[in-house]
Image (tube, rainbow, N blue to C red; front, side):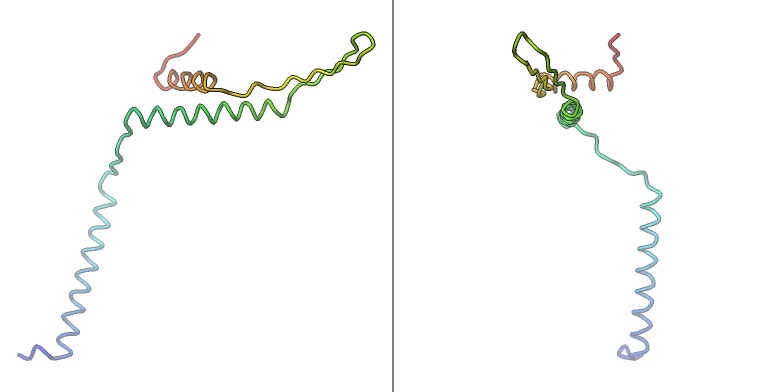
Length: 112
């Protein structure tokens, strides 16, 4: 038997390539059949995400109110007084209040 036969080498490589493709197809099929495991977030990651959501909500509310700020003009004696009421810039208290609302919602608590 001559191992250096080019036809034999080609056939052997083709068989190996076919087997490799079959193994890859089987592995892909098994991946699709297996459940997807996603690691759970820990408490710190969840609280950080809720705070991020609360901060975004507070700033969205601020920007919505910014577009509708109030201006009043009135006469006070001989002077014309212009009063501009701007929305309050959200601070840490507003963000924490929104975060607590989100926490209560997630935990199933309702404030009535």
